[in-house]
Amino acid sequence: MGLTAQSTGIYAFLEELSRSPVKADAVVALAGNPNTGKSTVFNGLTGLNQHTGNWPGKTVVLAKGNYRHRNKSITLVDLPGTYSLLANSADEQVARDFICFGDPDATVVVADATCLERNLNLVLQVIEITPKTILCVNLVDEAKRKRIEVDCPKLERSLGIPVVPAAARDKVGLTDLKEAIHKVVFGKQRNRPKRIVYNQAIEAVIGELQGEVKRLFQGKFNSRWVALRLLDGDPTLVNEMRNYLQRRQPKAEPFLEKGEGVKGFEQLSNRF
Ligand SMILES: Nc1nc2c(ncn2[C@@H]2O[C@H](COP(=O)(O)OP(=O)(O)OP(=O)(O)O)[C@@H](O)[C@H]2O)c(=O)[nH]1
Ligand SMILES: [Mg+2]
Image 1 (cartoon, rainbow, N blue to C red):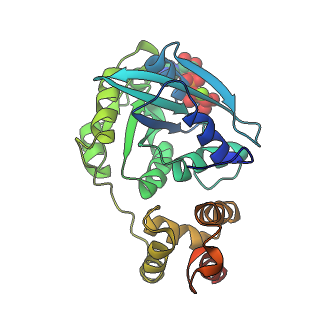
Image 2 (image 1 turned 60 degrees about the vertical axis):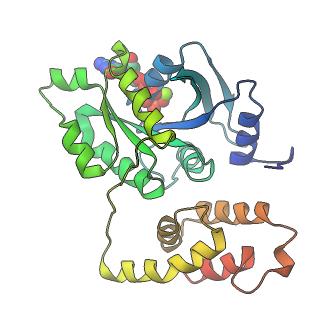
């Protein structure tokens, strides 16, 4: 990627990831609300093949680990717990930046079966960014105790992504989870995530913006998602998108045409 030692945030973390002695076939993010059992899933999958590190520039600790499945090596990144990707805290920003800009080959959202509704907010936000999402409905043992039953096949049909029930503390469901990850990462299953449709006025602006966004980012990000975030006007995200463009072509910038590169992005984001 040609990054330098001065890289910060997400890029420094990716640089560190690429220096890892274990060459992975894929990198998978593990996200979810706080206390849903992400680290338990992470430990169950990676065993002792893991280590922790700081996210450069933030006091956030991340664990990375590896496992093998069907002869492929997978690196798993255990992200901090987050209720949303709207980046209200350092933890949320780290999770969001990794999912959005870290280009993981898949993202697993670990949800708590005993309070699924609250957890689905994050799931909907993640599937808006990437179709390569898997939902792990964890703590099904606890849910059963509370007489809560989750209809995973139905949820799978509604969301358009694989849904795997698990009781990670007892290592239940982890093989199914590895299999679901394998299918999504290696293209053996194409997800068709539910599209969240907004009101007419918002949909009209998204439609208008999408073409320009596609041209600016050349297919790097889901254009619908970028358009929505520009409408939100989240300054940390707008800043990260600007960083991305700056890194991609700093030398080309003076020669770009109107509506291209960072300047094009400024014009676009300043409209909101
Ligand atoms: N009953 C039950 N408990 C679980 C299960 N998975 C995890 N736990 C427990 O839930 C608690 C939280 O688990 P963690 O793995 O630390 O959760 P986390 O999502 O990593 O938490 P944060 O990183 O703080 O957001 C621990 O006490 C686990 O032992 C499960 O499947 N069933
Ligand atoms: Mg944890």
